[in-house]
Length: 206
Image (cartoon, rainbow, N blue to C red):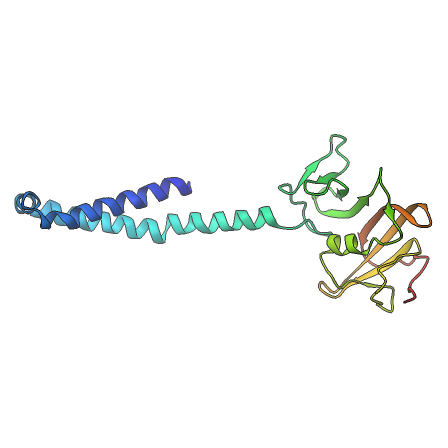
């Protein structure tokens, strides 16, 4: 409805300008003299319409549009509702695929909240053991820490298959499970909310 109220507002502005311009022409002055009361009422009405639309429906429509844009641009985060503007449901119905990066899969519960995020490198592999960059993107925190000691993993290497991850940004724990084709080739990793008690390695060496 934003377009409708925009048209009404600018129509009111055009009419107001025409009314204001009337006294500057001889014909306009004559018409005002013959219909002075109507002229005054018309001016007041259209000024009122313009003010109402600008401060009421048009402003409300603008705020709704801004909120809609915020929703459309909201990232898909663990524990939050899936943003269907940024992901599409797989034909199997079991998960959603990220529209920008099809290697990212989102798994949701019956309330459409994301419970797990999987990054699937197949058919290609992640050369080496570096997957930290993608984990940062999934958690939406560039300063994630690993293990109970909250180490920074400066090498950005993950030689083991299970880690607890801490997000200073959200003050939350996550955990990940990594699958490999070989020691140096990651095929898939999955991230969940919460701290796992079954991690193989709680800390990593710098």
